[in-house]
Length: 216
Image (cartoon, rainbow, N blue to C red; front, side, top):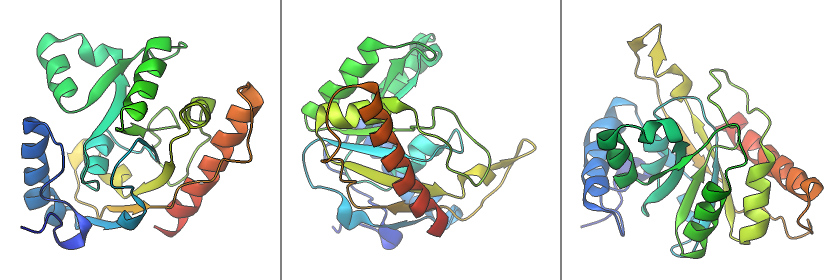
């Protein structure tokens, strides 16, 4: 069976845990036609090895909608409050989430991120830090630059367009959703492990994502 469905969305992943695999099939069969979901740029995604994804963030549904575009399972940070419930914490963990304490320098979350990439995983990052319900790509936090430079892994810019309109006044909407994946951003000329280097890397990643978002 061909693992890729029309519009570039994988029905069968590679290395998915059971719940993740079931959700992938549901999304491919239901979410794809409902939101006229399309993916471009899948050829830029390495078949193996650690990867970091720098993705725009407009909606609560962005982690799931981003994961739909990739054949390999994604790992992502989620606010630590979500893990307060034993049931819900276990659920989001099974779907690839791990906790981060927002507003602090969470060393454990940083170590977990580096370990995921070092082990060959795909790490989803929302470098804006918050959801923004507009059509702009806001400033990236320097943390994405730090992870990129410390890990040495390829980092792909990803524009997720249309998700800011998933809800309107509490009413679900069904906008057309597009995912555009760009080639790895070259950070090889940025040296050092200081804040200036991390900020420069974050800015370059921001510019790459913003360009993709503009033409998505």
